[in-house]
Length: 192
Image (cartoon, rainbow, N blue to C red; front, side, top):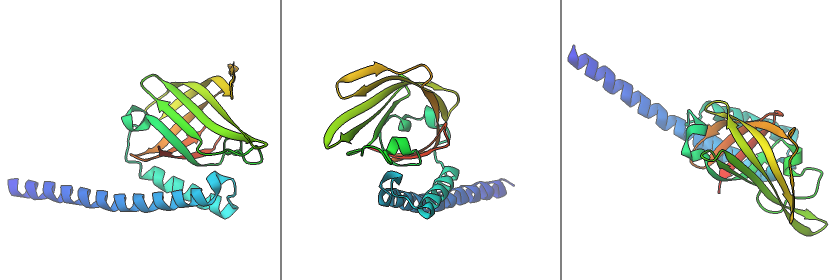
């Protein structure tokens, strides 16, 4: 009887390891295609409807393979993240003044703070912009976001109380974070 239990435990471990290996390969392939399409579409600015649909499909498949059960409790979520793709036209600058260089999001769950920063070209003049925010986690993957202060170049001003939203971290690993926002937008970010 003891030998049967041992064989069952070993079989379970082998299957678990094998499926983990298979999931890792699938995850790696999905990530590679997602990041390649994100780059081809210039963060989503030039995405065709077909490309946008494929990106959303890859995004959904990766969410189902999320290796981090509690993203907001994981130290992996903290740090600087570069926005690679979004469906939010206002964030990527679609139809607006172009963003120059990376769009960066800094997350710090220990101090419950976040900061988004970018450089925008206004008629050829590069101007840094940023917004700071307070985070209020609602569970292990969703946090409310209260924007606090905006800065455009040297000018700063407080954000109105009504400027708030949420972030739902639906996928997190060592170098990729997928997030859904309160307005239905998706965000693909890579660790800097």
